Length: 99
Image: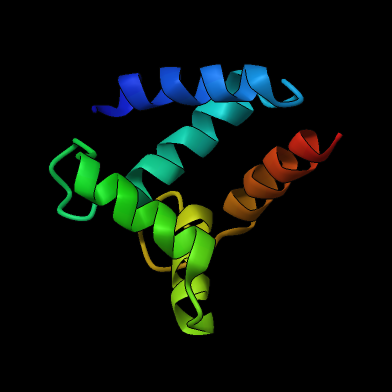
């Protein structure tokens, strides 16, 4: 699935949960999550990438692997650094979801 399809799928999932994550927060989070799952960078998350990525988030015993996966979500620009703005956007999305 491409980014637009991935975003629509997350919108549907969010509706079944608290529904608190929507609009710009969901768009930003879906783009970051999509980029972290698109292992080969071709702009499409295939079934293998989706399963591999979610299994890493859900079951990885390696603290280093979990840290790397979380870093990808924080580093929206992909430049290898987490800027203050990237951190603020990520934390706002997390706290909005927690409401």
